Image (cartoon, rainbow over all chains, first blue to last red; front, side, top):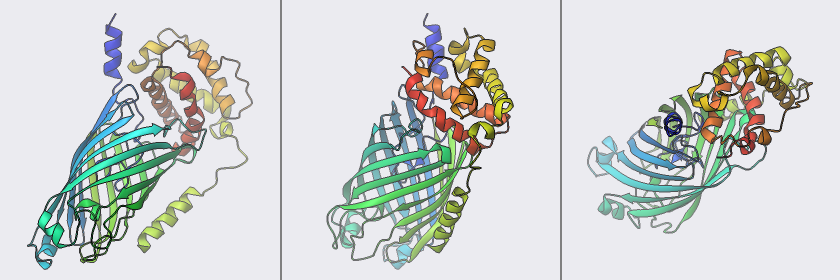
Length: 277
Length: 139
């Protein structure tokens, strides 16, 4: 009597459709590379659990950025995530008086709750899938962050994400509003001499689905400009995401992070690999 | 920055290519022969997919096939009247969950690939079927 149930349960892992997990955002949430989306990580349906592990590398004009993390999706409702980001200053570290190859690190613990809507099924209405999320971020190198004017090494972000798939147009759009104090995603601390409080920032993605496995698109993420020491500009990327199957995907992007720490425009290549279920 | 603007413009242009306006989706899918081929491919997959074993085990393929064709024809604005039961009534008590619903979608995508239907046209059909999840998935 229990056999069909067990067989069914085993056969029905990863029940959501390919690519609906998105990829891993730099802070560890499911989304695009820069913006968290409303979708819950992994491929679990409302009856299942999903998860994902990511490794991301970005090589810009002067810096190396990395992110590694894991996320868990519970019943297509709640997402829990953790990411560790690092920022290698390379030769610029020496120019900044920190020492060649000086690194900043950031830990991000995130939670996201899907409130309403379904990105795939709601094709007969304009209602997007809508989620709220929060990210607890803690940076290291407190003395340096203090010296450049950051108010705190820790910060909490809050965001609201709306993701809409226009399936008949093979087009996905996301708009995310984030309340944050983070300087350069939090790697350079939170708040600053120019602005110590929260800013409302916009993050958006547009993706065109070219096949079940391949999507291309563009993203923007605006950032606060809290530090008098070095101004910050929005980040942009142009990406291609390839989903080999529900267990393996990759995203390749051309990334522009704006100027960082007075070292000029940081443009480069972004590569992210993900494995999950 | 200008590179990004260029690429956005490229994407916008790619998106704005108009569909053949006068044709119904039914005609674009190849009318009756095209839809019959898709349904035939899909049923072959449904009846052999271990994920769907419990759902299709007791169904007569010869009974289902013409109803499935008529349903797709109707949904795509073709010259058919679907006389079967509405989706909610047809799937009542079958305890279909989202994973099985999506397995049917995945097999239908493969069936359309086999029939040579371009991906974007496939999505126009899937967009019309997707909201039926609310009637079909009851678990």
